[in-house]
Image (cartoon, rainbow, N blue to C red; front, side, top):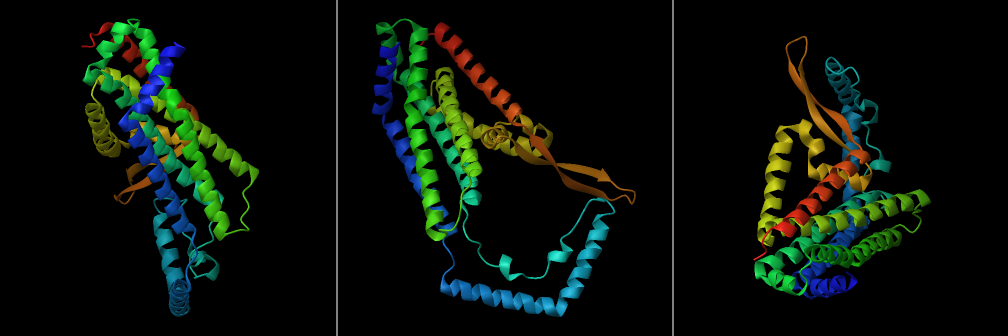
Length: 329
């Protein structure tokens, strides 16, 4: 088994698509760091002057019309409370405040979670793509049938390909996550040297990084399994795009109550250790007005773990059954 896995690892990294996918991931990681640099960079002298002029103008308008603006806000709040008694508008916070005007200083604890989430999604997709193409190409080229003449024990071949696809991408995933995290920290520390990152923040980011590696591994294995089932990389990508557009986009918006059973939200809930989403709650009030408001819902980490785990197990099991019984020629 180890010998087969070593052979498959060499085959994995000899493929052009693997190299292109990893280089693409590295380039996109660099673009994320550039975006973090732009967000962390303080305003220039001209931009500061422009911001100050805008603040002065806003404060001047407040001095002239502030009382009426607060009254209008309170009136709108009272109107909203007829249908939503808990509605509270920030009417006492409307006056322009220099402390909240302009661009705030960059903070690692505020920038990194969203950046890490984007980087995680990228690495999960790369794992899925590499895993799919690695196995599907063996079928489309006919080399799978040739390989089985040397090693006829199909389950050993199947397991070795899954192991190579999964293990081969773990170092790259860890390295890119480390590069992204270190890069954002250095950028923030450069522009805001006094910024302090607590142990809790590092611990939360470390846990999210570990979950990213685990999910990227699962996506790679699932991609390899789907490659066994579909046998064409282009077909798998077409199915994936169709799912995202039709199911996640159209179906997910039309039937919001089904969102806990969609893949994208469960991936987010796994990475963030739980996620919130909103569904519209509509009703007709006593005056006959039909109104809708967003209601916050929570998707738990346990739900996403069970959902994603079941999908991966089903994909691996079905692919093993098909590979064992179906003709590969």
